Image 1 (cartoon, each protein chain N blue to C red):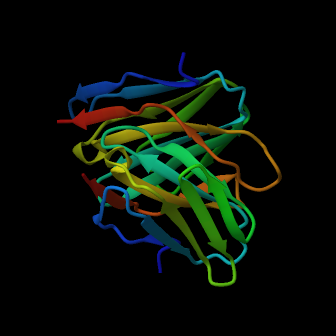
Image 2: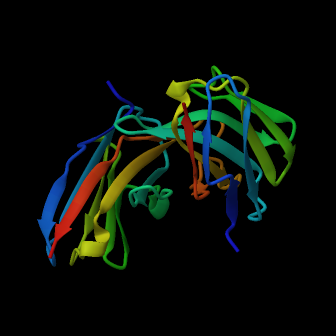
Length: 115
Length: 111
């Protein structure tokens, strides 16, 4: 079984709809991240979480919210989807490590299309 | 100046050649660096991490770090068509264990 899973893998929705993307991990990592990837823009951080009680905004958090339901689960919501949120979304995890940032492990991604 | 810069490519090399991928970064205090491989439509996959100046080898891959010059590179020896992918360079950001990614270099290995 995959260590980091994301559901759904593909989603097509309409402008104004509320969407939730879910991420689960079995790696036992404390830190979890949500990224979006657009052609030519690379990976951009939306939100990240150190643990269940610690949620932080990334560089592009506007229009998104998150929930860390448990150590293993981190959900991303689009309260009112708009077409420019069409992108590939990745969840990632990392552990606390050596005192400086550690490698992150990515889920398979969710391709979201907003019409 | 972008925090992590990579040539977008595409970089084309013949099968069996050495592919050289380069990355520069702007933050002198960065301590950790990573190379990821990403096939089209798939998720990034960690290839190498490097924390100290010098070379680190793993199979056909060698990462090189020069903190004084603020660059990190990835060499792929005996390149194979299956190495054709986008390679992402990332540096660690001390706040929150974040990684800052470059935009990636597309590599094409021709048979």
